[in-house]
Amino acid sequence: MSTAITALQSALERAAAVRPEVGGFPYLAEVLRQAGVTHCRMAVPSNAMLYLTGAGPVAVQGEPLVTGMVDVAPFDREALIAALRADQAGEATFPEFVQGCWKAGVVWYDVDLGARTCTYYGADGDRYVEAYPAVEIPI
Image (cartoon, rainbow, N blue to C red; front, side, top):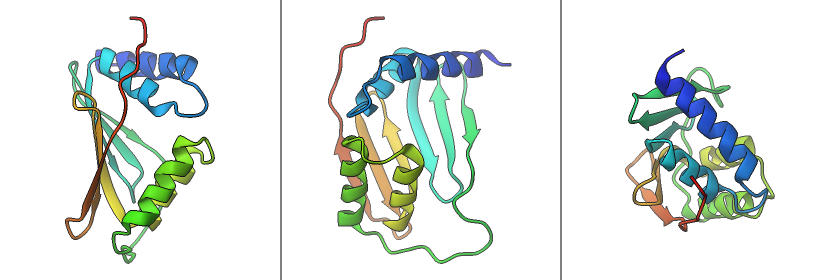
């Protein structure tokens, strides 16, 4: 196992231990940032996450949302915001959140851990940017 994978696994385990059940994303993001992750990029239909770290990039392949050829929904900002708010309120699991992004026409998203922003992209170039708050986590 590479140094990048080991460090990412340790960070994800630490984040799971320190993040609250509701509103936990900023805690996850901060633990990842402290571990040297600069960006998290999700290809939504394939459910594949790419973590860019100081030790090298790491891909994590989840269960794809679709297989074969499918139409992509038009970008729906209001539906995306509803999926975000449900996730932030602890009313959705991460797989449900990703499914909500897909239904809202999001084909990929990028989390910039330095800027503390998440940018969600539709197939036609539409995008929605949301900032998340800084949190304190002891190193």
